[in-house]
Image (cartoon, rainbow, N blue to C red; front, top):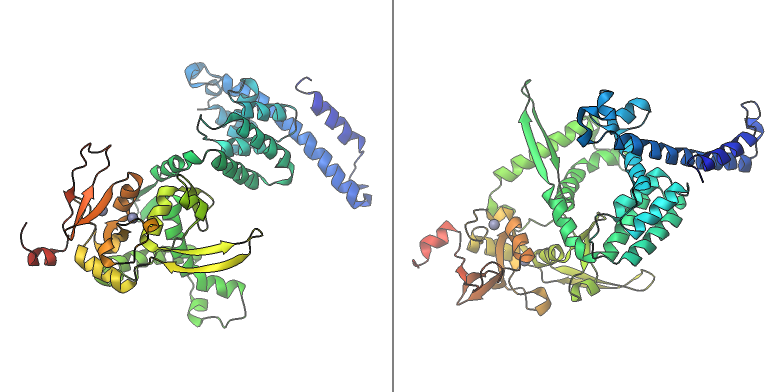
Length: 447
Ligand SMILES: [Zn+2]
Ligand SMILES: [Zn+2]
């Protein structure tokens, strides 16, 4: 069929409804909704044509074309800008149209993208839904089984009419994570690599900044900020409790309150004596994982409150520091049994460990105890009671490094040693990890 064939068909159907403003009120509910559905179909066909056109416009405006490119000749830096000037689309809608156009124009390299292009071209799926499925299913390892990806893509296509765009992207993402479990650690690392905090001082003397955090760090910050905002939300949305006078008379906006909260948190953290903060330093982020994932090589878990799976190494690091609670479910998702918290260093033990180690034990690291987690040197799978001699302080960075890169800490002759992985040191020479506590260094005989 030609590009405009389906468009003409649905256009004729819409015209045939004979809608006019005067008789609209007389339509039955069913007829009203049917008319809406028909128009939605028609718009989808219009969008497919728009994607074809956008793809062609972008094809004539590539970087290689330089100033001779179509968008450039019209005075725009890119095809996205040109499209925005031609029609009321946002930058992201314009780039969706362009990439859908490219999908339609170039033969896709994978089977699932081929199926997607076919559905888009037949007007069975919208440009936005095509984009959601494509983004959700990528990046995926080249080794991921092509048939499974194709089957998932077809399932998503058939589900797309019932799902919102956000739901569709989420479902596609979790399908990809199921198929390409090996890629979870890599994608987690990629997200973490994107993190930044930029800050600058403006001409008017104000301090400004912007940040981007990976899910784990973001949850830490957001849950802390949410906790501070909670009393205000309670006053707004729940009348049952007597409102706190102080909160009610607070004239600050939510944004101002958050700014003050962040500043206050920093002030507290800087002022606190590391020895006293430590021990009450319970993490605000929980990791959730199935026993099957834990027993098998590979496997993944989730951070509570976030939909991106996290790698086995991240799960291990959390279990190592905070222990775990076993919860047994039946097949319907009902809780059968609640385990006790196992392997948890109590706060008194944490204080003892922090005094003994004086900070992160890793080579050359100078992080104080308040910035550290406790690493269990015996793997939790091998049992062992929670003995302070089995816990050492590591800052989050080095704790992560240790679990991700398979370094080990050993205790021999009541001293701690770092054992590098073979990839780092073929002979795996043990490096001593002496205490960082200045007091203990004074007390202990020189080595
Ligand atoms: Zn650990
Ligand atoms: Zn460290």
